[in-house]
Length: 208
Ligand SMILES: Nc1nc2c(ncn2[C@@H]2O[C@H](COP(=O)(O)OP(=O)(O)OP(=O)(O)O)[C@@H](O)[C@H]2O)c(=O)[nH]1
Ligand SMILES: O=c1ccn([C@@H]2O[C@H](COP(=O)(O)OP(=O)(O)O)[C@@H](O)[C@H]2O)c(=O)[nH]1
Image 1 (cartoon, rainbow, N blue to C red):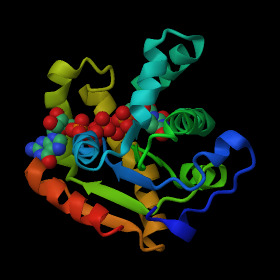
Image 2: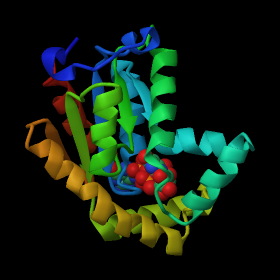
Image 3: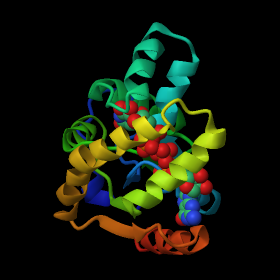
């Protein structure tokens, strides 16, 4: 357990107890900065549980549920879905994996300071925030390329621009918020993938 006192949760119910001492790492960065790529490598090396907020939302869309239809419309515009929806999905996914998890990588979350605050009230505090940083033009280029094959409705020029604008406006303040706690590690993701991972691994090893 790497986070001891700083990972305290305010937990009441028994299901909640399962995750109250979980090791939690937030992975924050712009769209296409390489969060998912690095998370995959962290899973392979450290066996952590990877929970991508975007993937959880896309799974709900793919289920064809009424809620999924509402989410799809929001995501297609590059806007943020209501905070409670994402938080409930993340929490349920954490509880489902609690018994076997060595720690959780929460990828693409929080998107705004308020999301982080609510997460801490309902689940617990992160012991590390990996800030995956790439230039705007790099992110656009990567997403346009990914869009050739990803099939993601939001990997198109217009929505990419909106996602990027929202990232700078809503998500960058998250980094300042957690920096004051000294848990932010900024990772330059302009480098080749394996070099980026070297820095990610160093940050995680520093937790022990
Ligand atoms: N050159 C280079 N390409 C990268 C790097 N990391 C990711 N990519 C590519 O950039 C694209 C986006 O990477 P993802 O890992 O999907 O980015 P993400 O931040 O998870 O993006 P979202 O799913 O939109 O949140 C992919 O096609 C990757 O192959 C990197 O370090 N260097
Ligand atoms: O906490 C979250 C996470 C994702 N999204 C939505 O899901 C989309 C895709 O998110 P993902 O993290 O997969 O991709 P990114 O925008 O980082 O490229 C976003 O544009 C939002 O519409 C959201 O509203 N809240």
